[in-house]
Length: 111
Length: 114
Image 1 (tube, rainbow over the protein chains, first blue to last red):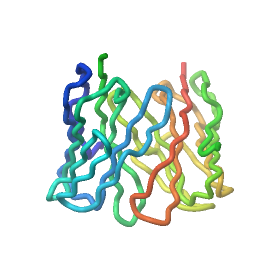
Image 2: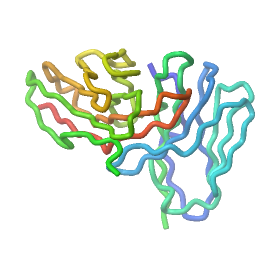
Image 3: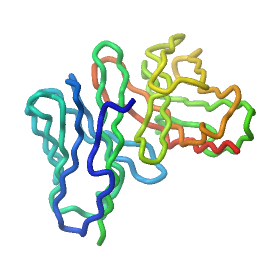
Image 4: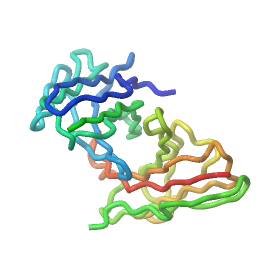
């Protein structure tokens, strides 16, 4: 059973627009990661957040971990075609080192 | 730099056949993982290993077996393939020296079971 729900499932926007994708759960996590996957490749880590309320910025990408550590969001400013891909959130379970992934948001940025 | 290498990259099987997917990493990582990826399902953990000689079940282990006889290799076996096992399989590894360390993925192995 997937414990991480991501929304929206699909998103198609024009270059230059802003967007936010969400990762939600009813469970509390010790940490949460965001990965991006391009067609034909494996996912690549974007960021890890560990503290409730934490905000991290990576160029035009802003990641936030909810205060209760049950949810996270990824905001992209002025999206570019190079941002196209599948965005996955993942959490690790304390003491087991399992990485459980969400259902993913597939983003397409049109030039 | 090789990183995580998966072989084969593509395979077509008939129902009931067996096969093994090989994952090799050259980063001296302790932890290794096998995932399957299906449309709309994200990545689902099949089995994982936290060190040479150890394995553990993930979310969807049924129909698969694994072995980690050498630290750098993690093998995923299908004893009797079923059409439901048609998927893209990804191997990943991490250092294992910290919680929530970075996962490094291979490029995937596309398996079709007819």
